[in-house]
Image 1 (cartoon, rainbow, N blue to C red):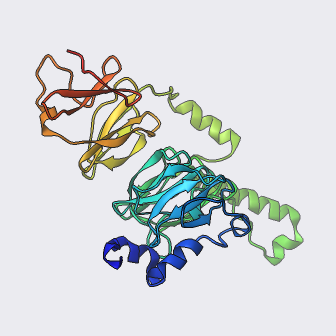
Image 2: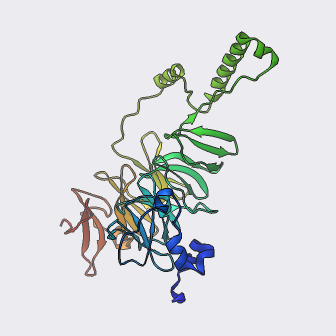
Image 3: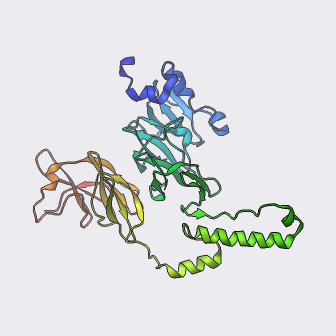
Length: 358
């Protein structure tokens, strides 16, 4: 049986490789008070462990490969066999980290990939972070950034960032070569007002102390305004009146950076991260995107609404002039493949196969 162990098994389980069957059952025990005291359901799965979600349990094979999330009746609710491993102990904000082709992604508790597996492993003791307050710290190309649970960019990826903490009470801490700063759940810097230095003179004189604090605060606002919008209502009012009012977007524009594709709005703001090898323009609210040799479709929120089930096929790039281009929806139908007989295969926006328009 040892001949069937996948290479990732040793990487995932580390010292547990020799006694993997024991570790697979007990790996999640004690991750939370709820998990430690939970009651496992009766099922035909051999190795079952608790998760932070009281209604879900993880079933794995003897050597740790994930099989399914099961409910409290022992019935499978999410098939996990497509993944190398999952971090069921990090279920939070309705999503769970998964590893596929050594890349990190996130699925919701219905099994839908809400964040495609395109991110780097974090390294060290953990290969992925748990979501916190619907925000996830991830790495791409060795750079830290923050996305939301719909894969929208919150904190842009930067090589100067050395670490980002998980969000707590709406605040995350960013450590960088330029220093440290706090950001809110929108990625905006939270200005901090430095306290006035304590000296013998200002301790004895409240008036002097107040004057010094006010002066320090004004200088801080003046310096911070060169980097981030100030936080006081008065200054924000001035800034807002000088900025153009941004209307809600109805489409996004494909844009390439460092060899990868993403999508920006008409102001150039990154809305879907640079994560794809190839993309198509949005059509009828959906855009086809390719990762390696498979295609899927995203909506304007960056959600994977049609999984990466369709293989890249050079024949789709040789459409006749009177045929709609591949990977583009028109009247609710998109051409996504070829049959063995050389006939075109199409789907609708619900990912149901149907005849292609003639």
